Image (cartoon, rainbow, N blue to C red; front, top):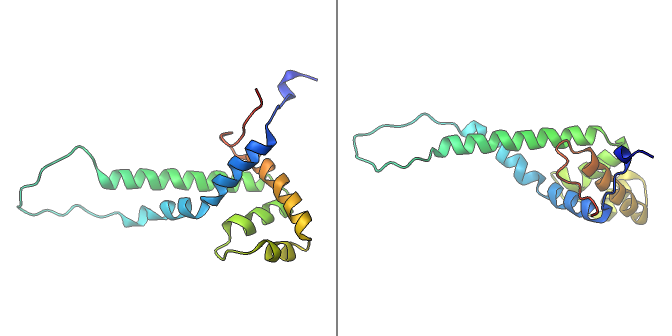
Amino acid sequence: MSKLFNFDINEAESRQRAMKFLKRYWRIRHIAGNVSHLKSPSYNHTPKSHNNENGQETRTIKAIEAQQVIDNIESALACLTDEHARLLRLTYMNATKLTTVNISMNLGMGESMYKYHKAVALVEFAEAYPTGELLIYRK
């Protein structure tokens, strides 16, 4: 087999990295939604000290970067099977926090099968994430 297809991925660590990343989904989504807070500058005649930072510009850049991350997440989920994408959405992206029992029932599987499929789905998500930053390779 060619070395090109020798993906010596550390699945356990990649799974953990994907899980930590997806747990931040709602925070990233909130940051991405902050673009709507753009304001025009206000002027008054009171002298001010100036710094070189532009807070509005910084917030806008962070919101755009966060939206790119959301787009990358959606792109990675589109590469997964429907079942695995749905499992990850219910587990990490559902507005209502669901228990393992609720998610497994919603998916029509037992808890042990849910845990198995979740582990597989997290590795697949790490592999599908466009930037490759979620994968950890063995040395």
